[in-house]
Image (cartoon, rainbow, N blue to C red; front, side, top):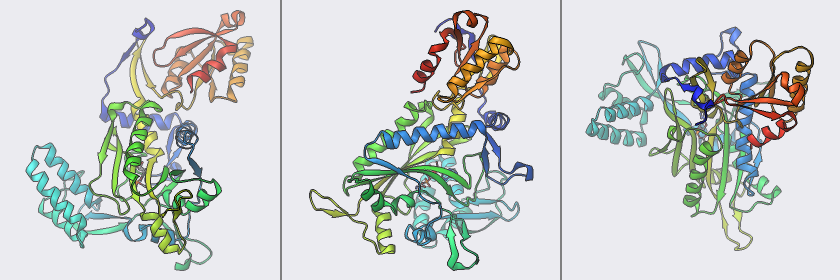
Length: 488
Ligand code: GAP
């Protein structure tokens, strides 16, 4: 550790307070605002501000490049949000994309019945009541398969005397199924013939384009189709800032493989995706966890989640699913179009199996906020710093003239203009240099370039590193190259 590094001391974090601090910082500095705030907002809807939209774009660009350009056999598409409604009958979403909900009659609060039971099992485990946990877990497994799932879930909640986690009340209604898809009407008449859905996942836009993409891009199995786009779910349980929203963005890739090779492909994607978070985004490896699904979605035969340790709990960022040939087969049946693939060399015909990687860009954004938030003391002064990887940071560099007037200000403005076409940079000439550093630390700007008196003579600037506060001189003509090298 160099001398400069010794000037930085970490301040112990209280995880409970971190979320409140993050929500407030996110709004104050222009990362995330509540949606339509002047009208009182709208539950679980948020807007990304100037820095937030820049950072989200960085996340999506990084994913896009990693998934498409870095793989010769993966191409991207951008399908429409609204699709022919039969798509959702074929995919099973009309009949099965439901959550079991239960209301508390006293508090009028609504809960996911399955979550109440899962949390109860987890609590039994935490309390070392392994036998009880095992007993409830096997009831839950058979209840999930039961013909009358609602009744079976209700019976467990009553028998186990499960209470609402936030209020402790247990005045339960029956359990009911609640479909998560948003419906709207297309055309002038609000009649059932014009009923369309807002897509609850981007994946179906890929499945229905399987042959279009294969033919137009001359793809051979195995190949993948990637997509980033909005998805909508009428979630019963909302909250935790941008973790669970009704309108959110997915980054999905469907990889089409020969039946029988799906497990090998699944394992390879599992490894690649997990490493991506560590190697490309710099997320703390100890905060990432695997979770294997025992209870599978209607389309999957194998599923794992990549989870992150948020301050409010360990929760999913990305799902990796082996979706079998379910979707293509269903679309073949409902559309009457052949979804088979013909291997040109062996003449084999089959409906490909699909391995899917499905990440949420909003959840990843939140994970990066949580993972990067740092409080430390530098030169005896407390500061807040977002330790974003330079690639992700919304602002890559700040240009700070010691004096705003005259030649110094002009030189700094010129440097800003030269960098601005290639990098997101900020020019700041207001307040003391220390205050300006703090402003940039708080939004995670990895480099500050200070134009001072010496710059007029030696045509150099001082570069200051965010994490260590270390400083060194660099020629102005080399700044662009310096930044380019730091952002690979
Ligand atoms: N096509 C598969 C699929 O949609 P999913 O596990 O339901 O799988 C994939 O969703 C990812 O989408 C999740 O890992 C999560 O990151 C994100 N996601 C799902 N629901 C969300 C919500 N209500 N708010 C924010 N992100 C959500």
